[in-house]
Image 1 (cartoon, one colour):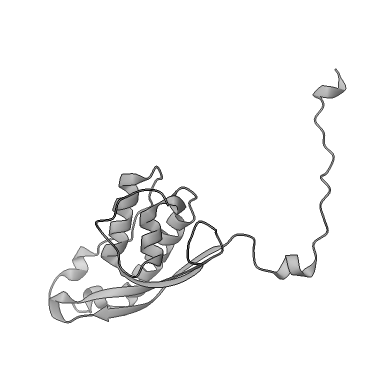
Image 2 (cartoon, one colour):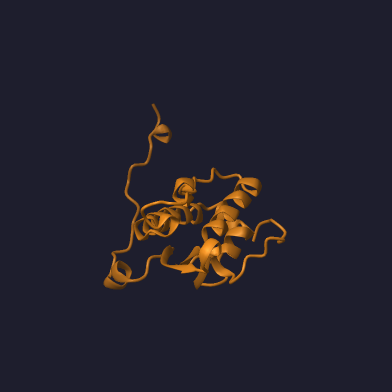
Length: 160
C-alpha cells in the first residue's frame, strides 16, 4: 500500500472565533413571521388577512426587510404557481376548513380565534419551508408574494 492512497486526516487550520463572530449576525439568515390576523369585511364577504414579515441578508432578495398583508387564497396562489413552475416538492397548506363554513354552528366558524391562530401557525410553517428551499428562492412568484404589496396574477413566471 502506498502513501498516496491513505486519506489525509489532518485538521484544517481555522482562525479562533472572537466575540464579534460568536455574537454577530449570522452569515446567512431568512426569517419569516406570519402574525397579526385581521378580519376584513362583513357578512358573506368576510375574510382574514395575515401580516407576513420577512427579514434576510440573502443577496437573492432585493429587499432585506419587508412586510405585506396576505390572505389564505394568496398562499393557495403561491402553492399553485410553485407546483406549476418549479422543480421542488411543495408542502401542503393547512386545510380549507369546509365544515367551519356551515351555517348554524355554535362557534364563529372560520373566524373563531383558535381556528385563526391554528391556521396562522400552519401558514407560517408552510411559507418558511418553501422560502428556505434554495430552488424556490429563485422563483419570481415567491419574491412577489414576500415583497410586493399586491400580487400581479398576470405576471410572467420565471426565475429572479
